[in-house]
Length: 271
Ligand code: KIV
Image 1: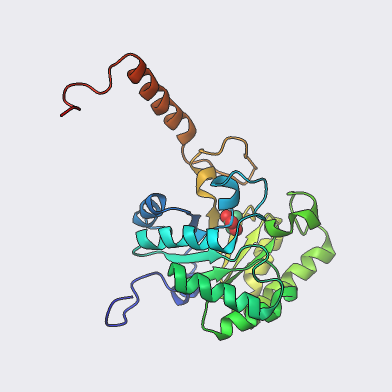
Image 2: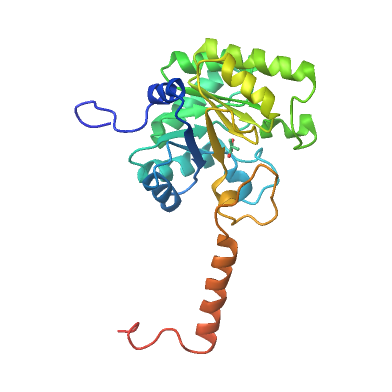
């Protein structure tokens, strides 16, 4: 925000206008200053400081171990790099499900300590009180339905969600609840395209899909996956835009080789 109160970042209101105009929303994850700077300069609308940091940054199998302090540390680094994108911060497992006052405390810490612009929480009607309390403090909330990785031990698998009618019906109801509560957008993860289209048409707030087909109002990917840094995660929904794994490995191998052969540093690179 400028000193005169003009908000320079993409706003939650603008995202709703983009949906109304049929302009698709781009979202990517980021966890550190350097990556966030490139993503922001490329014109990505929303940067998600995802709890997927637990997987891609810390090497954990699930998102469960990451803490509120870790998320605030990542978010603080991202916020410093960003001039335009809306920065949304995941509220980690165990810091909002216990009670609405715990949720509010966690989200206030995220907003105050990191400077992030909004938070994201996983779940529908079951976290209604927490969402209401956080929204009442003026903190914008993004919802997350479908495959919700913080509940992985309840699902037991990362396969497509809501293929059965009962689960699809609950997902549509949950989306409507999140809209009524005042969430500004909803992530739809790994659900059938047809259902994602139905949800997107049923609500006025934007849906952001990951593995949810082409008819959501925007798309999100985990940055390490789309850059091809991650090697062992290649779900069907993932489009790899670069092969940074190979590029980086070649660079590291050349570096080692240059040191061993005493080609680095040369005279020009020395004082
Ligand atoms: O943590 C994350 O990266 C996410 C995206 C997959 C939406 O929640």
